[in-house]
Image 1: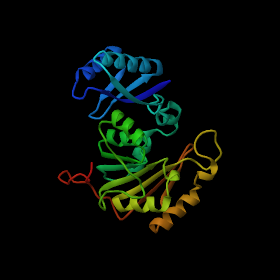
Image 2: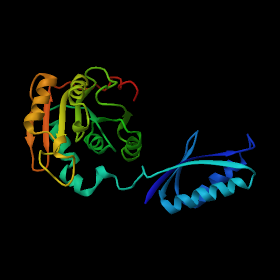
Image 3: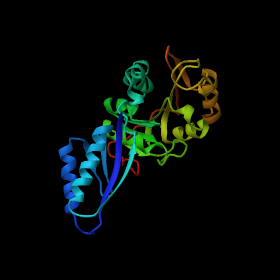
Image 4: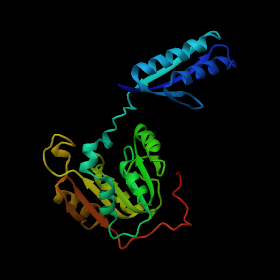
Length: 264
């Protein structure tokens, strides 16, 4: 099993960095992937390798005297990214869906709401757009930043977006609206973007995806747009998904000389 360890090492003799240097040398020799931050170090890899690397780092540091090691272990770095499993990508092909969401829109920017590990943000970036992903989960955003260096990622909630009105050409919900409070999320999306696109699971019982009570019928999804935004969307029903598009009076563009949204 793949795990991540967040740890900090403290020599009891304050100001003596030899213990830290020895610990880092031991980590480098272990071959386990690690990153050093100002406050802690992160290790990631297979469980046994991570444990052995922590042990080696501690023993190397302890050669310099009394040492305290604090560590937190988690499986948050699971290498089987659930958003990028082949069967899921085959059913919801990111580039194909991104192109459908952008059809007829002269777009330069896209906001991916509920981005997860950045699957659709990556698709928009590959199509040449300035892409931003928003998600409330910092662990998923960490993966997204590592996987998609061509996009920007921000921790936040779709119901309260930190962007000015009209910041983006497209706001996209990729299988995420059913996790949110849909009315404020749709209103916020329409506030910051010219077009709103919602990708959702079809309304049927399946062994994967959300339970039936969390899925939208086409009629229910159209009614949400009507209630939140005052008019219904265009709907596409494919064999494996439902796509809704709504826009407000034409597509604005993000000019090349326009400042990026604050905080990115």
